[in-house]
Length: 108
Image (cartoon, rainbow, N blue to C red; front, side, top):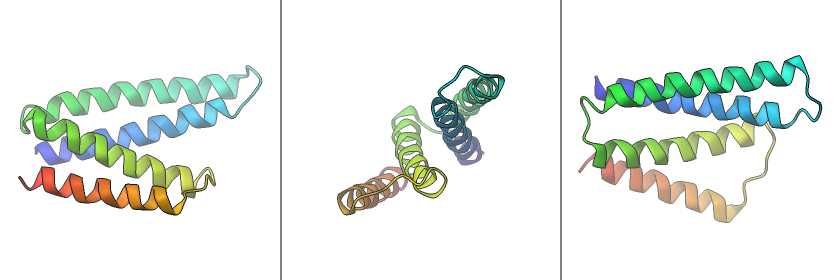
C-alpha cells in the first residue's frame, strides 16, 4: 500500500510541476495562466496528502530518497517529451545514476 501512495505522490508532483512550467511559459497574466497555476497548487496538495499517507507504510529514510529520485527522473522525462527541453549526455548519465540509486535505496 505504501508503494501505491508513494507512486501517486510522485505522479501528482510531476504533473503539478508541469502545470507550473506551463503557467510560467505564459508571459501575460491571463485566466489560462491562473488556471494552470491553480491546478499545479491543487495537485501539489494532493501530492502532499499521498506522500504523508505513504509514510504510514514506508520509513522516511526510504520514502524521501525514493520520492526525490523518482520525481527527478519523471520531471526530466516530462520536460524532454512535453516541453521539448534538451537533455545532454551528461544529464542522461546523471538520470541513470539516480535510477540506480533509487533501486539500491528501495531494495535495502
